[in-house]
Image (spheres, rainbow, N blue to C red):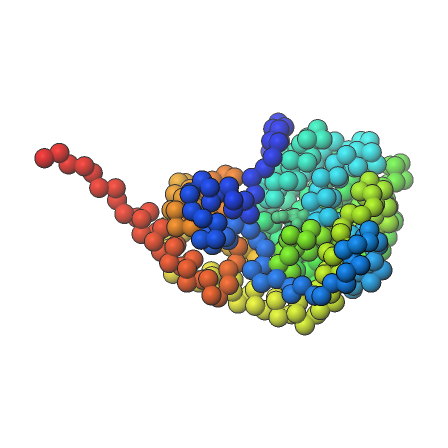
Length: 377
Ligand SMILES: Cc1ncc(COP(=O)(O)O)c(C=O)c1O
């Protein structure tokens, strides 16, 4: 499906609690915020040396080494979150490949991707649950896969990704993998290590302008799994062509010094990472079970997601919107999809799960209560 460009200047995201609190006239500290996919438990902030606050942030070899180890890759750059790459890529891609004009994007997915490509004037082709037919991909095009997808939870394994990577390489295009939530998936599912392995050049069509050799970028967010979205740090895993191209566009001091030190500690702390993974999984299972118990099958159609969020689909078109409102009235903030037909919940802690459960139960009760007709005596 091809869409005509729409120019949204700012997009609605989860995490906009101030605005919602004002709208529902409930004080900020009374809210349970499950509107994002950020882990509810964060990496403990280590003691930071005073000079970290005083000096301009330098490239930290220790952080780069820790990140290469964690992401299992040989080349990366440090960025101000994945968002910095998402924003800069469309213009940079056109500079590097003047024939680039088409981009394939998931119809449901983190909307900043579509926004950035549309603003830069690309023709956007939205795909739904299935990836676009491989043989239909246009030369010099870009395919964006959010893996796992936020909010649908859809996940493609490496064998599938590999085929698309090879095809895009043949087409002199680019595969963009947004792996913002992949830290909670089984080990070795990330595509980062495939880029590190080095990609053979035998399929490259020599007539094209060379745009690197892997024709693939992997975006890794730090803030979600480590529960520290506020420090704004992320990584781009790519071959040296794209790492250099982005470094020259983004310029120095992308990420502040304190964030770099915190990320270095977190990326090295394998024991904390393992505990975090197990804890998030247990919390997700408990929360999914709660939803299944609270919402009858006649209301809830299915639930999807990963260990950082759960997205609920309902039988009736209006249910998500109504439940969203009924939850907000009780000070529970989840994310109503832009299509207004699903609700996405971040994972909450064991301590707060009963509050979420009670609010969902009450919302469901009100949803199912028939509006009493006023009878005239
Ligand atoms: C799929 C996806 N990609 C990227 C981002 C941006 O993440 P960040 O810039 O914090 O790394 C988000 C944020 O919610 C996201 O959901």
